[in-house]
Structures are given as structure tokens and as C-alpha cells.
Figure 1 (cartoon, helix red, strand yellow):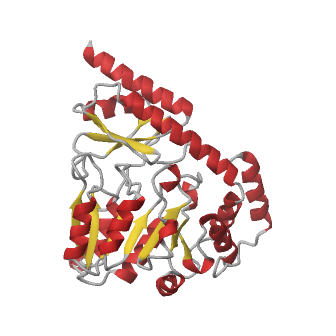
Figure 2 (cartoon, rainbow, N blue to C red):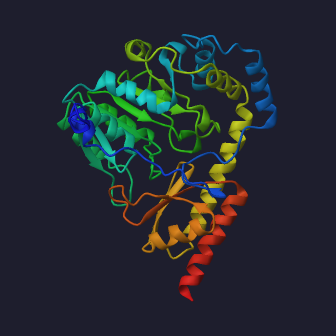
Figure 3 (cartoon, one colour):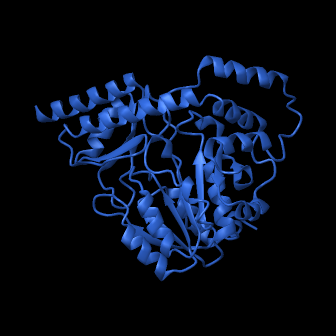
Length: 360
């Protein structure tokens, strides 16, 4: 069999997909991946290192990370039986789609949103039913509800705060959707520590609601690749059947437990970054941009008619932001995440310089 024939053995749905991709570029000021700009404090790292020195590497991690689940239960208020931990919240989303969306099933997504949702849904043979955001890049709750009624018992995946736009669903919004939706609602709340409404209080009265969260953002743990899902114990028991065994390594498991023991550090950083986000939004609104959009996350998007020029100018200055103009409705848009105070100052100065040069 030659190569061309072997490629035809790949599922046609997969062959027709474009992969999720980010060019691995290194710059002095990296503001393109919604990362927390702060590394873990040295004392916490030393605590982790001591554990690793003593822990045998030739033994598997815990089959069920009970201690971590207990710590997450204390943090979230959800019983440990309603929690699954995974290799990033992306793994949790894949497992949920495997369990909840059958071949030819409907998956309701709002667009623009995180690209991986659509990739996974299409790869698994589901049919994407798209609800566009409003012209102001807010959730159109009435259209979401109409779509839920048109496609009953479908899987709905919503991101709140939404990536890449930063908009979020209120408690009233989520209640309105759950009132008419007869399928499962998976709510990706990877950025919720920075703002927006946490839907955890709605879990007990809505068994068709599942929430996914992560350690990548507020907890400064992007390198851990650790996420988790929250739901009713009965639903979680079924989802658990197709979760891969030993899906998280002992290092990530332990670091997450340590971080949950230092919530004061996490909370202080989140408060600081949320305040800097609001300040950065105010700054951008003083610039001659086409539009600057509100955000409840640790990032924001803005529209600039000279988007390509501005992106290149920032990169020349050693500042990397994210070009999101390939998303639907985001023509001419760039996304920037909130960095440290120094990084933010460098970014703001560069944006001022760009418009000063262009105005001259």
C-alpha cells in the first residue's frame, strides 16, 4: 500500500479538518496564550521539589486521586463523587463529547469560541449547530434558547467567560437556558476566577449541567496540564467509565494539591490581574482603535483596521499578541492577555508609539 492509499484509511471527517495550531515563537513579552504572568513562588516550588525527590518514579500515580478530589471538593463545594480530574480541561471536554454526543448527534456552540470544541465535535461525527454572538460580541441568550428548543436533547457547549471574546453568561442567562434545554449543558469556566458568574450553585438543581475548570489560568499552572469537571455524582459515574486510566501524572496531582493549600496566593494574583485588566481596557479605549470589547477574563480583544501593521510592529518590539482575525466575526481583531505590570507597561508604550508614528 502506498502513502496516498494509507491516508485514505483515515476517517474523512478527520482528513478534512484543519488542526488547532499555534506557532511556537519566543519573545521578551509573551501575551498571546492567556497565561498567568506569574510563576509559582520559590517556597512552593521547593515544597514540590522535596516531594518529587522522595517519590518513586517507577510507580504509577494513584488510580483515583482521592486526596486531590477531596481538596477540590473543599475548594468548589462539590462533593468528591461529582468530580473528575483530567489532563487539562481539554481532556475533560473530549471525554464529555465521547460520552454525550453520538454519531450524527447535534452539538450546539456559540461562535466565535474556542476552536477545539468544533474540532472535537466534527471529529466524533456530531453536527455543529452554531449560534452567533451578537454584533457587540455578547451571548445572544434568546437565540441560544431557540436553538435548544429546535434541537432537543442535544449537547450544548458554552464557554463563560468566553475565549476569545471575554464575554460571559449571567446567572439569569444560564437559568434561562437550562429552563428550556433538554440535553446536557457543558459550561467551560476555565477563566471564571477572573470574573463572571460561577455556575457551581446551579449544579444541585440541574443534573443536566456539567462545569469544566482548569489550573492553567488563575493557578499559574499552564505547564501542569490539569483540569477537572464538576457534575452530579450519578452523571460523573457514567462519564468516568470512558476516562483513560492513570490520566494524570503524580507530579501534576501533587502540585495541584499544594496550590489548593495556598489559595491566598492565588486570590491575591487574581485580584491584581483583574484590576490590571480593567486598567488595560481603559487604556485601549483611549487609543484610535475601531472597537475594544469588555472582558471578564484575563485577556481582551480589540479591532484595528491596521491589524497586520500593529501585530508586526508589536512583534518587532518583542511583544507577541494573538491574531484572532480568522475567527468568525473577528475580522481585524487582536487578543492580548494581561501580563505583569512591567509587561503591560511595555505593551501600552508600544501601542502609543504605533499610533504616534502612524499619525506623524
